[in-house]
Length: 102
Picture: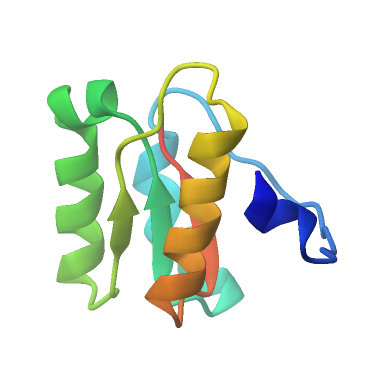
């Protein structure tokens, strides 16, 4: 948790949250609407095992979107998991949005 305590953060809550059956099919539309081309997808191993990440990744890659993925989120993630995601996004450079998948 040391990493998070050393910085000042600003939080801008999303203007829209899309969820529900079939919502992942709308990801390309949402990215295009906002002009985002480099999403960072955050998910867990269950979503990967179910094949949802592959479907989304294939769909985005086909559209020329540069996707980065973190698929090691644990249930009820502890601060250490959140810290790891924050560091991965910061080190990955160039991500312009975050997609929570699952």
